[in-house]
Length: 404
Ligand SMILES: Cc1ncc(COP(=O)(O)O)c(C=O)c1O
Image (cartoon, rainbow, N blue to C red; front, side, top):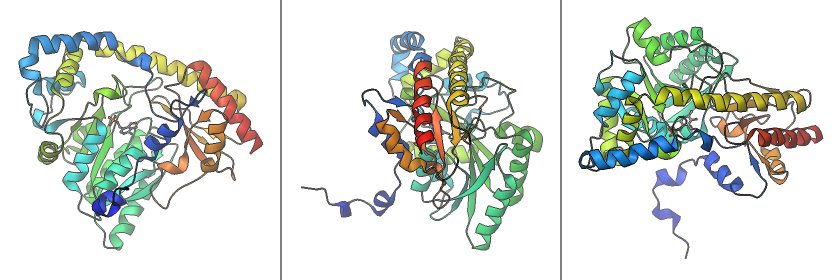
């Protein structure tokens, strides 16, 4: 007997699903399929031996502590190590919340500030997994377009003005400034400053999502918005940052953190108490020891080497094989390339043809807030497939695009 849908809450019934997770299910394990679809890190990037040693040691030596219930805010030992690693001495421990990955931080942040119907301004396109988590908290998304320099701040101001004219409350701006998912773009320094100025003037918050920041292969590291707000604007309440160990150590660890104003972190911790009780004790301590022993820097150098080489391989393949008129971003870091096809190619329709041809990508429309979808774009991931498969995957796609 089918489970009666009416017994589910209204919120659950109308909640969006993560298209990416659904699409990954459809393409996973299919014989011969080359997936450029997911955002999976390379299994070669996981520091398995070091983590295995640390997990064993932490349980044996510190088991009485780490196998016990812990603080909802997270382990102070890990928080201290994170702040040391980030070179942050001016941040108090109560300005940091340990989370089960970045998604969990984005969810608690949204829970803490969103009333039903509030507006969250996001980049168009943006990461679908975060957008559905934000919407699940009752927010409505309003997208502002991007160009090569990232989010167009002028257009953010237009969106805020327009929503306020409709009598709506704009609560925060959700932004992925570095090697953005899906576009691979990085927001320029001038735009970062302009966005902070805009948020301060409009009295809205910024949620800065930074899972890829440490995966830079080329170019100069830019200050994050969280740093800029504090150092240049003397403002320690406008920006909250979410970071994640998913793309550095492994998403299976489910570990990340948020840093922001203490009262907001406390509000997020109130949600943590109810939803997760506390982050995983063993994982937190193992990662704290990983940082403390100085394993992180050489590890990041090793994995950025792996990803730089994969990024170069896919870009060479795109240059050699894509038909004329197809354009793509050349990111300085992260895991994704954004491809724009000459119209009238519809990448939603192309997805099933590509699956038959043994290559998967994510159609661009899946990354737009409702009503702003474009169908001529696609996201390619270069972190998971081998370099030979990246080349073959691009060749399969190029053949399809030539025929379309
Ligand atoms: C921009 C962005 N935010 C958040 C996440 C989720 O990360 P986590 O595994 O830390 O929840 C991802 C993962 O792909 C991402 O690309």
